[in-house]
Image 1 (cartoon, rainbow over the protein chains, first blue to last red):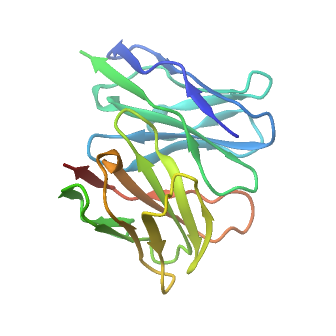
Image 2: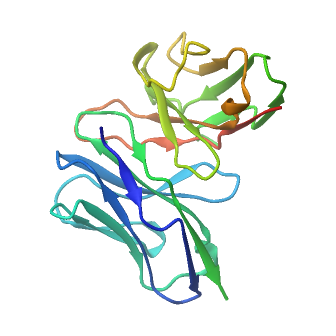
Length: 113
Length: 116
């Protein structure tokens, strides 16, 4: 069964510093990959997705992620974070042809001024 | 607002009571999903519908749980004889019909259930 591991449960960074949130998934079969953000008391919002094509994917709010098939990773990056990026971030995977999303346990990103 | 809506946003109940949650998807979306998110964890898939047909159910969906989408529009999730372990955020999502590739799932704000 597919599984997703987010290697850091919490990541504190200073404002305007770069950040990387790590994500690894278990299966090597064809997959779709996603990053979602969840602000307090809100639902999930899609940041970006990898379906096919270029392995570097750009999303909203200045985030980007790189798909690495050999390492089964999909790490999320932002070159300069803002206070408003404080949130919980979830990596998710879906096997091609499947409908359900399998989520990681989340990474809490805290931005310090 | 044309997003996915869920009602109620919060529900507190006593152990053993039944609860029902409602989800209204985005109007043209024919696929509807339920997920459960416990504290400190990512969402876990429960079930999904295409129109009124329930096409997949997780093993997490015990016989105390039932989901319906009678007319292919809104959906309800009922939990009978609630247990403290049912305390969680219940998330609903919807997506367009699958034409090619993958269709983005749009999530509602969730219903937070607390079982005392």
